[in-house]
Image (cartoon, rainbow, N blue to C red; front, side, top):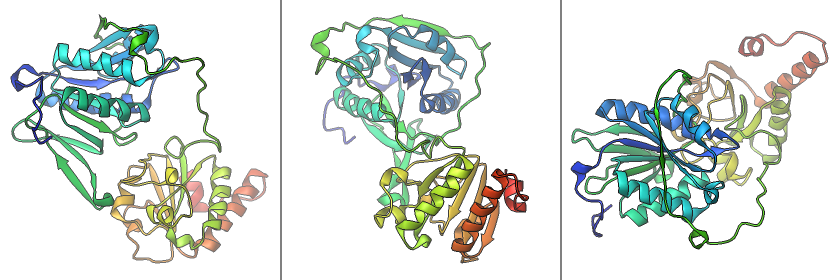
Length: 356
């Protein structure tokens, strides 16, 4: 974003509107796309401009009409058999063609694997900037998009502006923004566009597609209950105890950055600015002190239950329920009483009954 290269789309006054790249999957929108529609609506309304969704795919017109209900003014559909499954080159060609043709001022992508791949390719093709993994957006005094993302390992937030080039592009993490409600009565326009695609636009021929299914149950960023462990566990073996609690509650295990950095649990379980963002109904913070970068990834949970020996731990400042005590006594007691409850014996402990 230094302006070294000539931007073929310069002339900022010609750019108008906010676009959201829509990811379809099994006839439904990815949740990060829905969340971005809500944030895109806020940005578009602030600038008094239309909000457009872009949906490359195959036989997706019904999905496009459904997407309008989340707050879009229109959806641009490019329908082609080669777009049925995400592949880098054809999707990049479609988006680059549409952006050059219509000149949106802002384009937002979900920071999914596909969204990161697409945004990264497009910023090179279009010679514009891209701020990745944003957690917040604002508009500065000059009308530029203020793209805010974690920096220095999540210890601070960087404000990124793309003043010289258009479109301004950014990707945002899943669960950072709230999904807007769906209004089936909302009216909008579905615009059908064509882009020339052929087998020559493919890097490889697709012989078979098998969808990856995650082992070990529900993901933390999809679970209604998350049981998260920190450095206070003292040993990675105690994540087994947290897994027992999560299993009883139908939830998923997660971890703080310090537990991940210690090699106790893989990074895909990390919650925080440099990990995932979760919004469960109940978040258990067990042996977690409450560093700022961790709070950023879970503080929007409906209910937060903290268990920590230190009564001055920062996690208690945002917890709805706090237990000052030895987690190695408290958690086994939770597990014991939950097992008794499931077996039809004995009452549920009062704090947990209130949470449930």
